Image (tube, rainbow, N blue to C red; front, side, top):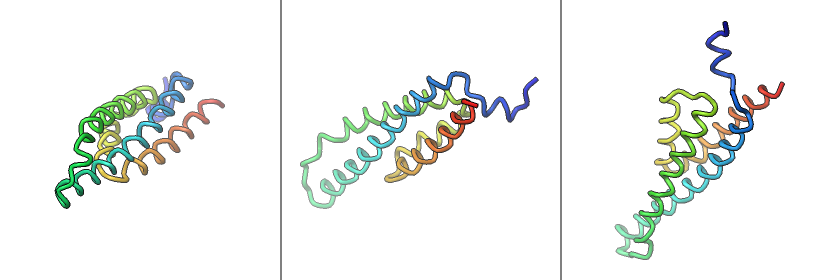
Length: 118
């Protein structure tokens, strides 16, 4: 019988996990940039009464939902707990945090994938 530690680090389908990681990395970057544009939209709107980016909140919401799907997809493929998935999902609502979370998640997942190759 395998230990809990072994089960937690084992990735059943490394190729699917690699694809999910690639999708997650792209979506984390896109949602991070999109969040910065949303902050700019709010500054322009409420600070300067400029409505040039009034169209942005809806596309940003759709992009965030795709980020949630990418995070859940990766989380299920690499065996994260629900709590970990939620924390990574919430990283997409704090400016600049999605960039940091993407680097950390990518590093950890790539290390696990490299270990799975051996």
